Image (cartoon, rainbow, N blue to C red; front, side, top):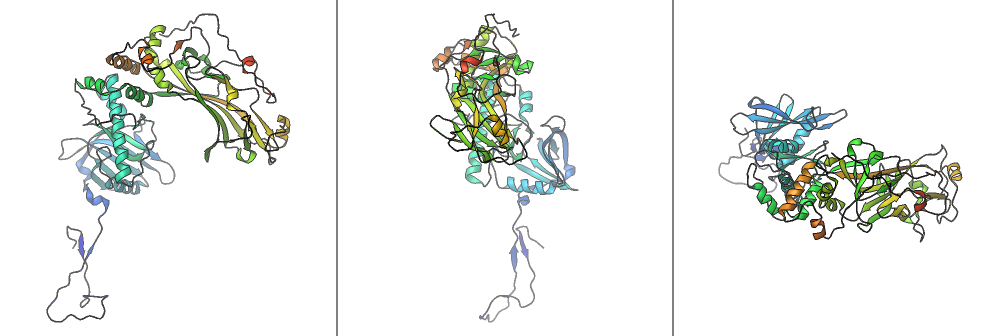
Amino acid sequence: MASQSGLVPVPVSSGAFFPDAHHFTVNGGTFTSNICVHQPTSARSDFRMIRRGDVDLRREIRLDGDSGVAHRSYGTRATARRMFSAKVRGLRSLKSVILYEGENAEEDWSRYVSLYAESWHPNLLQIFGLIRSQNMYAIVTHDDLMSFGEFLALHQPSPVMTVYSHACWNLDLKSCLTYTKSYTNLAMDIPVWTWWIRRTTGRLCVELAPNEIEEPTLDPESTFPIDAELRLGDVHMETMALALLSLPLYHRVCSCSLVRLHEFSNWTGTQVTVGVVAFGLSHGQPENFVKVASLPIAGISFDLDWRLYHIDVGGGIGTEADDSGWTCFHVEDLSVNAILTMSVGATHDTRSLWLSQANHIFRLLQVACRHEEFVLIESAGFQLRFSASSGQDAAEGYLFVCPPQHFWLGGHSFAWPQRIWYWSLDAQGAHPLSDEDALRLGFPSIQLEMHATGVYWDSSVYEGLRTFHTAKGFDAQSQELAMYMGQPLYELCYQQEPLFPHAREQSTSNSADTFHPAADYEDTPSSEPSTIAFC
């Protein structure tokens, strides 16, 4: 019978005291042999086994609407992971139960038990007990866990406390990453794991399982230099938060964790201005947006470059062919899965520039509501998408794309140039091919696409900014803070200009030898005053 120490006596045949020994003799006496073999314990032995009948599931903790599924795998061995709030017999506090379902449930359950057995940290999920009954497998955790949305809905923190809470969760994530890197073999991948909030402490709890549900973004660098308390329900907590939060930290949390993204794809316009603020998100279509505020011409600078992406491989950067800046790509690199992108990104933190001045612009525009309608355009991309032009194999050849600077219209505006690319049979590009010859030789056809990324915030974020800037001694509805920080100042666009203007005449030819941006685009503002109704 196995002892509680894990040592299991193993019977041996009579006289087999030293079965593998040679050339020695034992004389005199009576001897008793007890041979024990140490059986290595499994990870499960560190945790109590709980009977299923002792657990009362109270409610499901939902992450993706009605299904409540935290993660689902598809295929012949489908599994699902569900989270429940539960009462365990004999315990006063609620626990959470992670239930593994499907054909691969036992394997997943065993794997995660082993993972959590290798770690012990206040911001990593901690096992209280295990359930294994009638092909049902579950982990019972310490504390009752909540989603981010449930926590914020339950406590309804002020806008300032929402920022402070995210800064605390960022601190928890940083501590968790430091621990896993230094003391375990776990590879923490921030976008993959599932994040919960502990109900009793309000602090972050990381579940080492993938999450397919979009959740708030946490940034381990947007946090305090020292540990910070998060006391739920303390009426003095906001005063402490205002003292601990610095201006850069407050703006960074708003920029990373409270921001929302809006993608503009394949609209009919041909021009984009980066750093501008536009109104019209509820209208949906890019053509309905109008500019309301912009930075001065010398306000920000940009990074411009060509990047080649293969959907099933990854990305790379082309090489310059000559001193003029034209970039050369071999035809073999331009498969049907290839996308060549000229990306435009501001080198300044445009989010912080806007957040420090937004309430000033809203005051000038007399905006009291619908703040989420205002979108900051922070980047753009001009894409060349390749597809096979015929059934024949392409000839040996090269694609040359124009210098990124040819997209620049001046200021912060960018548009398609007249001549974007050409094909050539020689690597120096000395003899460009016509579009007709390129298609005849089997070179890929090219489709032009235009993209831009905008960001926006809801009214509560701007309310919190007013409170925070005032607490720091600034006039929240002026540009005093921006001037103090040495930032370029936003200016109103007094005319109703479209966010994405059209070219007067869009040419489908790619054979022009010169580039004349000013001659082809509508850049003259309307003489009519803006008639936008913001609220």
